[in-house]
Length: 422
Image (cartoon, rainbow, N blue to C red):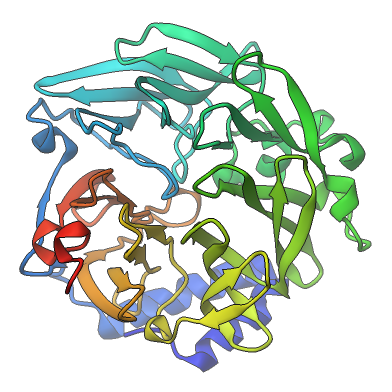
């Protein structure tokens, strides 16, 4: 049911014609669904996996309407797993941030700085189980707000959050106006040309959480080496390694050949190095301090999942996942498993997969319908993320006809420590 190499090649050729690609892709997907889709299908699960809503998980009241957590690089649980945080869209411009605790559901904030893919970058503080960070727009300025689980504001920073260091001492910020101009599905509807600064004054900022002081640590102008208009260049997808001593990020631009991506790694001082430069890089997670699990393109292996050492440049291809589409990988807390997902196949099914790093085997956790109503900027990717104890996986899905979050109990699969000898 996956797309074959010829179909993928046609998609690559259409990259330079975005409007044509969108139209062709939509028509082709609908035709495939008519031919291959099961009209009665909503989802299927591995026999050992159980599914429930976050409210059921926390034994509290479920709220009406849509619900989502957001991206795959953070988790809705705090470290002690006695609270979870989610977004509830109030309309297309505003979302409530909900905190689930045992037998209680509280709205702790509302924000207009959110989107359907990443929410408001809402996440738990890595070293304080009672503090939650999220992006907000105040007086036409994007900020990072910090609140406790009762909704009381602790502090705020004059820069919006992109990635928090695991030590909690700093975070990386970027220009969401530039991002919104190029990728509105990751922006906040604040496309303000006057705030797309000269690239010598734009890029990534490191913000100290104790003082709020900031510095431009990655200058976009230094990365631009082609004739594509500067406003079409942007940075995105910043991710710290486990110790927080380095981070990776994407430099992208929209040019005549379509969207092009490069992957860089940088240290705390802003010294950076190009890691992947074959035109396509999408999603990734750290395996350890130096190795990345990346979906992208290399000259040696083509498109697919790779394991890349950012220090040596050594690259391996993940054969067991060959044939699956791009997805959103994240590492289990014990470091043995990668959970990832896929984009919809011919039958409009998103696949949720577990990959064992040592055994190089794949277990399918489930399949979930991707309704056509949830496409484009309003798509509902699974974006799987682990619970801190490694026994459960959180996803967002629209397989029941509404965007909701779900918790999958994978403890019987032995996905973490309980299956260390599997």
